Length: 259
Image (tube, helix red, strand yellow):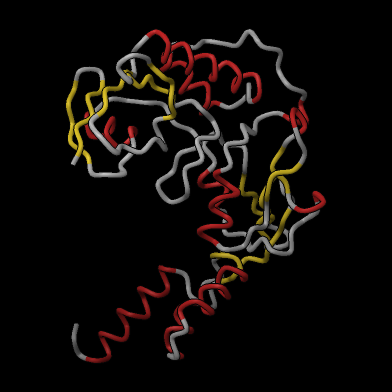
């Protein structure tokens, strides 16, 4: 165990824990955008910078992926750390000026706007944090989206900017997006789900009893392939919505005399 002194508060953390872990344990808020416990931490957004005291000199580091390997002293509230985070937030606001989620974090940080010119409409809203690409590759195992272009033209997109055949329409990218850029759209006329702005579509599975729409057909197929339960009843129930599954279970218990 190592001691992290963060803004005067001492906390004990295990070897390899991050400064962010120590701050959360101490109840000290550090803003994060590209961090999520389910995927690798690359510190791409830089919004979590803090000041590390090395004795003779100090250094700005990213809290989300800086490992604690010895006793350290960290400042979240120093002038240098605060100014660094605010500077990053102003750049992010220029990149994603319409994001309500981003503006809410900015307000909590004391940033009310940006002095930088805003990007064009076609580049707007994505902050390039990489969470969507990481969850698609590391958790879902599809790699349907990735980074494309360089510099100000860098963006997250599907290969050749066409609807991806690898996208199963699970919506994990939309769920993990910290600024609400990725949206899930349901097309009632075709019974499909669309992951926007990637334009990838997948057919929705329909409950065999009530007709309610559930997960997409590729997601259901992926589940069957991974679970590999050789039990026909399991596969039958997987084709029902949660409400109908509960009804079938209750009916089975009633017929067995347990109710």
